[in-house]
Length: 186
Image 1: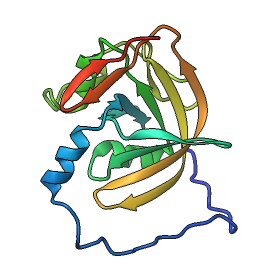
Image 2 (image 1 turned 180 degrees about the vertical axis):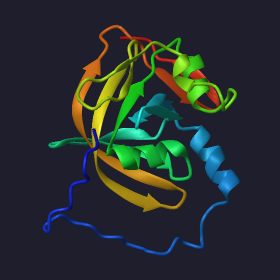
Image 3 (image 1 turned 135 degrees about the vertical axis):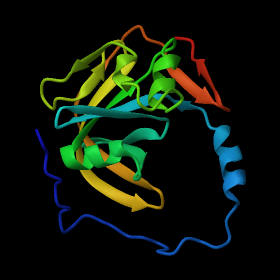
Image 4 (image 1 turned 180 degrees about the horizontal axis):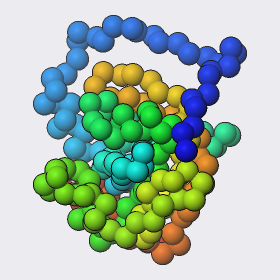
């Protein structure tokens, strides 16, 4: 099932403050050192396009708005997963739970690239959009793509949330300073 991208309404606001990247920026190494200090939820972004499942590990996922329910995900435009998301017009965000570090590593490319990444974990397919969903994820979001913004090597994917399935008992997996760790449930 392919979902067409919605065209922006005429009254929506789009404004790029500086179309040219600043020449007065930190080095890539300095940037990466700083970003390692960010703690982020570990997510697997998945899509099934023409019978093939694609996915990647991402910490760059966040809520965008509650009305309408939307999230934002940043994805490298050079990867096969980005192209599949463009073609499908939909994707899933599977937020990992403590104990799912192996799944994160599999989708992060830390294992043989020829390996079927979905062989790690217990997967199901959503009925509405046909997306790969991790059965024991901390939470899953089924997303209909509504906008893509090109920004350097990555694209900002803005998506409407079609369905959300939270887990009541799962503690989230977090990535910080190059290592996985968990948060205790309160």
